Amino acid sequence: MAEYERSVRVAAPLPEVWEFHSTERGLEALTPDWMHLRVDSVRGPGGEPDPEVLVAGSTLEASVQPFGVGPRQEWVSEIVAREHDDTSAYFRDTMSDGPFEFWEHTHRFFADGEETVVTDSVSYEFPFGRVGDLVGVFAVVGFEPMFRFRHRRTRELLE
Image 1 (cartoon, rainbow, N blue to C red):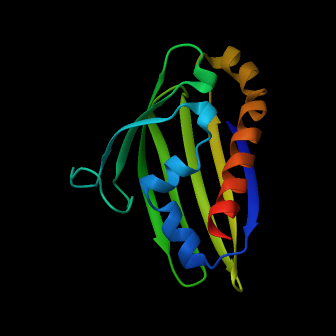
Image 2: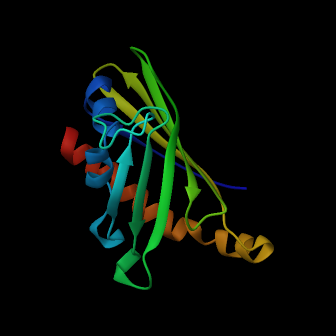
């Protein structure tokens, strides 16, 4: 299983950063245009459409087409955990259908005075066994610009 992690310090308080990341709007704002994200459906844990906050049990059906090349890649993810208190918060989403054999993304938030440290940790595995493992070595080439954009955009929107 491969791992990727990246952190950023945001000059905004934890409640603001947490609230922003807890919505579909946050996901859309943090996805680079070159990914051509299309959100097809968002459902709360009871199946209700378009929940205001993505709580544990919420599912999101989307597709991406990186750089507008090739067929759209369907992606279904579920928020499987979500907790917060006055000094820290996290949520975790897993991919139940999509381009990876396994995908688990943990978003962690830690208050540091009036600032917040945001850490994205991804565990992933490509399909096709050993061939996928070889391709996985190069995944950082795609992940690094994606998460660099997400973190830069978080700072632009919240600071």
